[in-house]
Length: 114
Picture 1 (tube, rainbow, N blue to C red):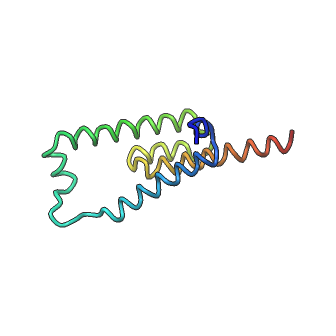
Picture 2 (tube, rainbow, N blue to C red; picture 1 turned 90 degrees about the vertical axis):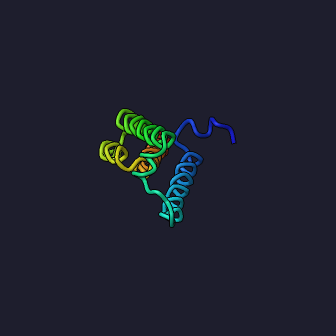
Picture 3 (cartoon, rainbow, N blue to C red; picture 1 turned 120 degrees about the vertical axis):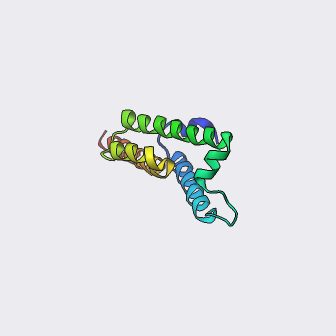
């Protein structure tokens, strides 16, 4: 499948968002705390790499929130952008799915009228 299929709201892009969200949720559920695990705070305290990755996640969440606020067209864009600053992709991916679904619906209705 060419990358151009993902350039605009499309069923392919919705499937991509849904797959990413499913993998994220499964990782969170299946990868729960294990015996001997340090935990978030201790990992961040001990590992420079973990600190950089944590900051990277924050930067990407901020960029995703900004993208959603500036390019979103639905009423959920601002609350979802704020939520994504705290919940990251758990909030951003569903919001992007809603935005794309609304854009696809508007395009279908526009073609039906025209």
